[in-house]
Image 1 (cartoon, rainbow, N blue to C red):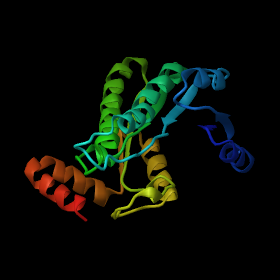
Image 2 (cartoon, rainbow, N blue to C red; image 1 turned 180 degrees about the vertical axis):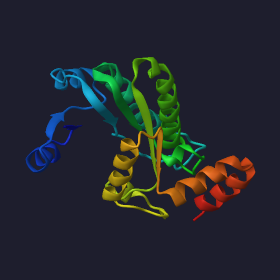
Image 3 (cartoon, one colour; image 1 turned 180 degrees about the horizontal axis):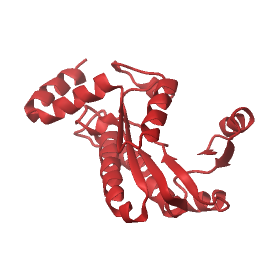
Length: 213
């Protein structure tokens, strides 16, 4: 089993305590990805999970640099990883992409993050079609709010917040069952899916109220 990331201290800890081999690279650098993973052979499962979240606080004065940062890490970097690692997944293996329940509906201030995750969802669905002849399955993971250093920065209420350990359990269970979409916690994500089916004016009114809190 391999864990990848930029934080050498975390990778070292995983290697020491969980019998996991750490591979250090920046997902925004295709050459680093290729060099760090060149000795990897066939993979049974590839999970692409890294991401970033920044909010656009003033839509009228759109921050294009912020938008580019989020899109680059959350979407373009997936392309870099896929170009290097997808060919290493063996027939019968599985690819899992980390989306978000934020892709279901337009949330306030989430122009960058939500756009990136909606694109990841489309990417996963398209890959599922094109990789079918290769006998490679694709799963899209769509969590609700999970307590992590990234969500600790949020300055708004996060309903039905779960721990990283709980999220991991949901993901492992979903992958074992071969689910195409793994979304959790169910009470939260099913509610969002319901709102997505209703007339958009209903959600827009709710979203405006949320942005004023």
